[in-house]
Length: 298
Image (cartoon, rainbow, N blue to C red; front, side, top):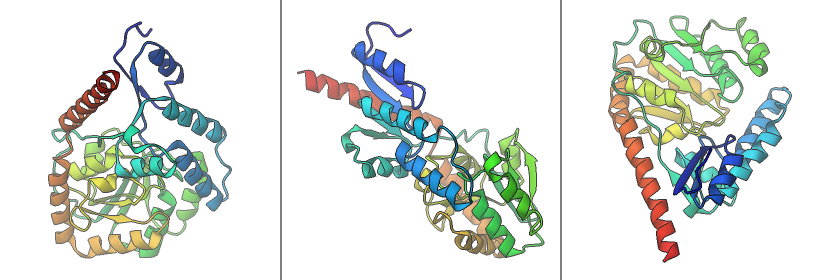
């Protein structure tokens, strides 16, 4: 369906191999959107995590990673949302001049500051599986024994984590109400959001929580660390570190005023990451790559 004359093509990684080739034939500058770490880095981290918990590696993981990597290699440029993603490409030998970086945004009109719940409540929103670090969050929660508090895991429980999640039910209390049909409401019922993902390019839910005036705890392998001011609007912890998660949660539990102040600081940070800002950044990236083509042809 692509026309014979194109200036620019922007495709989503894992979905655009054939379209990418057609666009190149039409003379377009090509960009692949990669919302995660480099495909081979992501696959390696996922393999390690499944081995860590004695789970089989998902079928098709290698083939998918190879397809995604092929798209990135054939494109003129790859657009990523965070410094974490960018560094993963550099580590794989990708040329820095072919990488474009623009963080995603949040609807600050939809996600607004609400009063904190009376009871300290920890929220997780996302796929309840090994990639998102749920195992480390549950281990941290079990160690804390905060009987006056709640942990709510919003999302579907993936097959690779079913046995693990159910095993923790006999050690500690937590809730799994299913998918959050209204994320803003779910976040309003929380005191803090925790997302200790093994790998996540720039999870939207973190900015959404910050826009709701909630402190956040994220792993170093999420692009969300670019949105935080460490110790002011949230905390960044190492991957696979229940101890670090527990330490930060205990501090937020014990210091409710500071927790609320951190949430307000998070809101101010989120206001810098609007979708309008993202749109302008993307348009600027388009201008840059088209200018480069013009310069190269002169």
